[in-house]
Length: 116
Ligand SMILES: [Zn+2]
Image (cartoon, rainbow, N blue to C red; front, side):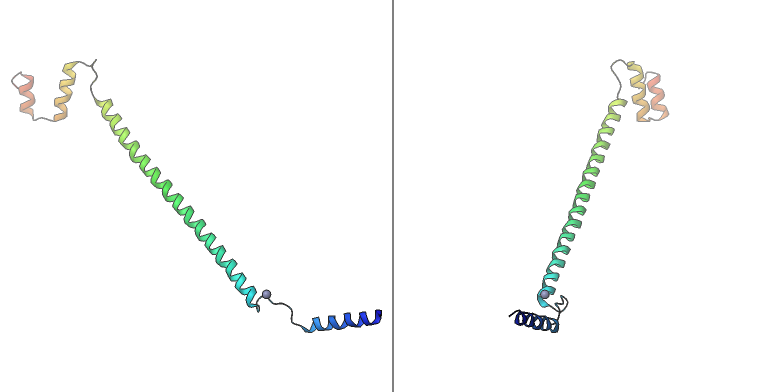
């Protein structure tokens, strides 16, 4: 009885040895599966890159808007700073105003002489 079991076992082993080993490269099912895994990985990678690019663009856009806004604020602040104060001498304010207009010499002279 034990001898028969052993014989069957040896025969099974011999049969198994004659069969080809499973080669994933020759197996259609394995190749399909591998291809699906590759596709999924490629999709994930694509999404990862696109997400990163989009985030980068949004951040750059945000930064740009911030710069433009800060530029406007700084410009307004500069104008506000350059405006005369109520404590300033009215004559100084007037002089600066006419200096800013860059009038011709004759007009400026008339103004100084009280003819303007
Ligand atoms: Zn297979």
